[in-house]
Length: 123
Ligand code: AMP
Ligand code: ZN
Image 1 (tube, helix red, strand yellow):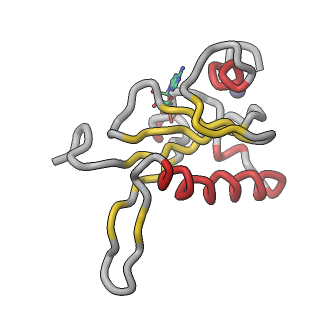
Image 2: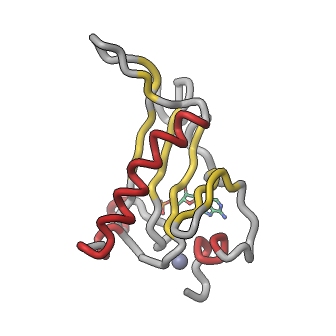
């Protein structure tokens, strides 16, 4: 897709701090992090929003979602479960969809946001 910043990152036309890549996905640090750890899980295929996804994208979305905790762990904000109680650590995994969802880049991406509190805008 011409003029799509995430297509350009996937094609290596513009640089990114990439932490993971395979045939389907590229994952890089957000340029304006909202927390100590903030990376984006991005399909290489151009899909504008989550609202454009259907059955054909089930496997891709599943791959994005299950990659999130694995990479969060590697980046130091993983969730450690305990047998009882809430466990430790953790992160947010978020899609922004459309103007009212705060979406700025119209190429599907999953935000993974974590690290020690307080985060920007939080107490
Ligand atoms: P949104 O569309 O609101 O879900 O978020 C787009 C995100 O992409 C924002 O958090 C931006 O900081 C981030 N972003 C925009 N351009 C770049 C870039 N060149 N490299 C890394 N992150 C970017
Ligand atoms: Zn794109």
